[in-house]
Length: 205
Image (cartoon, rainbow, N blue to C red; front, side, top):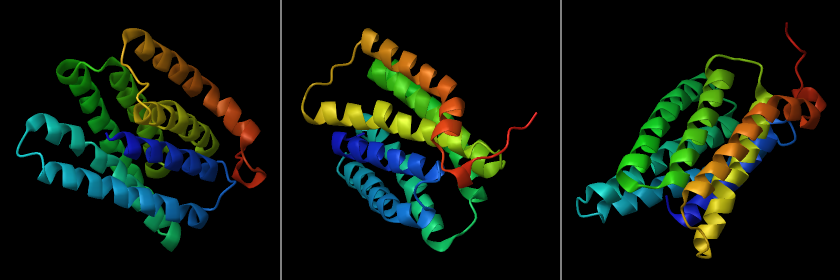
């Protein structure tokens, strides 16, 4: 994923997390989703056209569509008030594909940090499936997870890549994994604390 595109993925994930916490309306979050979604569809198309059939370059670009289609869909749903079930089931396929890209990152690219990042994205998109596809009342927890992963897996890596300060290593991968696990564990509690009153749901036994 391009460093600039990754930075904007972090921004839109953060905004969407705030939306799920009830502090921004879906319509209010629609423009940034449409802008970033369009960027994440144009960019891989350009890269693939100019890849001259190189499998490595095509594989590196292909994953961008998963995010581009997601954000375009979120933006369209927010602007039109269409239901989100289809997006939820699409998110399940994104989660499965993300696991595949994690394996590819580990075995073919030898990028340990982005192996972990792809796995964290798989978890996040699976929670989108639970929320939108199956209707589980976990919006605030998913909001915290989305905003947190926006910073951890996209915003910070994207910025460090842009300024030339990102260097893959086992220790970096371990740090991202540890922070990601803590984020996953704490997201339900933080979701209840940070959500707007209208977004809160009663505890279920």
